[in-house]
Image (cartoon, rainbow, N blue to C red; front, side, top):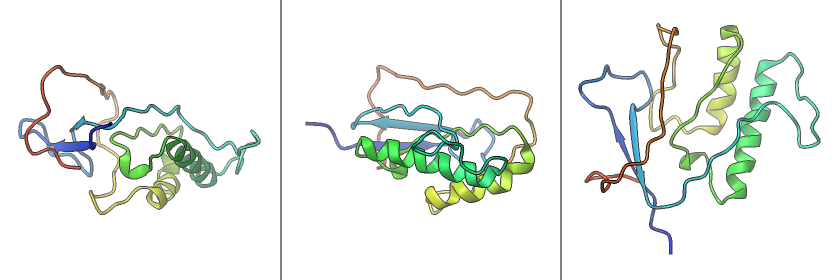
Length: 136
């Protein structure tokens, strides 16, 4: 039997307050599932909305939703989402597609950050027990 999944969203006071996301998400229980990056390909492999970032983002999110559904999940189960853009001018169209799939009631919509020179992130497995007060 699988434990009930728990998530603890943490913003340490020693790190600048983030604009619409959480610096640390600690999870326990449930299963870890990795989805491959998705692009604007229809199920038959054809490109959706050639040259239209909004249509391609919409299809990419539909593909992610299908992958999540295939393992019994949904976007409410996602603890990390990374989006790569070739052109910052497409930001609004991509955000609009994202907002159709991601519940914005948990946090403010993400915004572009003033520094773009370097960004680092990690997925870490610790040996210690989950923090007290984890939330689902």
